[in-house]
Length: 166
Image (spheres, rainbow, N blue to C red):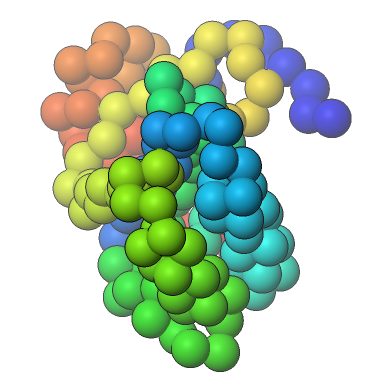
């Protein structure tokens, strides 16, 4: 289990960054035959992606929203995200096909959704939290005196000036 990192932390990242939200909305809870398979497919996809350092998945957070579970994913490139989504030899395509087949049996019982953000600049602050979000996906660094305020962290575009990782 991760430890709490005391103090004020932020993230540091240089290069392309994609934030991808994907979720499921369970509209008919009494139809677990339709929503359990969709929910059960995601852990396998996340395992598959996490085991492959070249997949492009940097990190993810599993959350619960008003209609059901959703995941915030951080990717190193939009091309890698799209490549995974369309690769017939990986877990996403068969799961998507199975979901569409099941959804036709009871239209509206289960919904899926996603949003994709290509991030130009990002600002973050985490005070006494376990590693999560952007710092977990990229690099966690202490908030410097120069970047003490959100406005200054965002104004620079990169928080703080990025240095190459070794």
